[in-house]
Length: 252
Image (cartoon, rainbow, N blue to C red; front, side, top):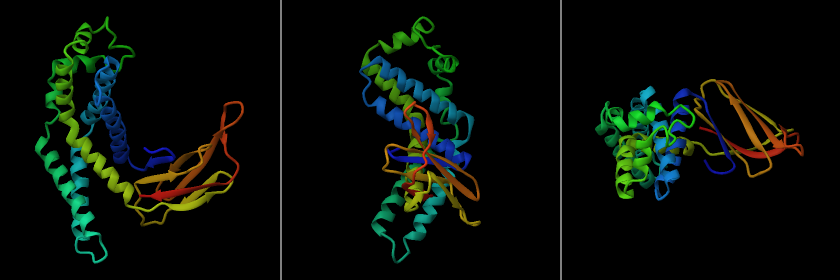
């Protein structure tokens, strides 16, 4: 997420998507350079976190359902007279390609990780603080200190198992965020309420501010979005900001 942008998902499906998106961003960042064992540990730890989410819920089915929905929307936009056909065609091509990859991995796509003895041993100690320390897992230490090329190949093979799902979520989140233009408004006395019309369907609230001295706390339900801005006082405590705050809100 960019600096100055704060988001709140309004349903469980999107919360799961955004957690995976967050972890996948961390995974891509640290996996781009595996010269350091601590970076490699971070990559593997993040990979295990993503696996834990994917193994608990049928994220693949939800991703496919959303891909189908947006593919249908893009197809309708193709015949709209005021649509940017080049952009619509590019997005549609990306969605079709991602969908094919998600379909191709099948429902048992996690089986490769589930049946991997090494992954299983890491998962066994994953929730124990410090559980993957060297004295606990000499095999893990040996793996990390083995030939770097072999480590990279192995880690990439694990990432490839979940890559189509993660890439699909990245694309879906991009579409959701681009679906609505931000509206400029003011939080009077640091507070702002937005009434949601009955038939309006919103899954994501985005608050955009250029004021680096405050941050928003967002709460929301079916009918009302509430935003309160906070800052840090001289004692280091976080308190509600009492001045007006100019910001933008996007309801996606």
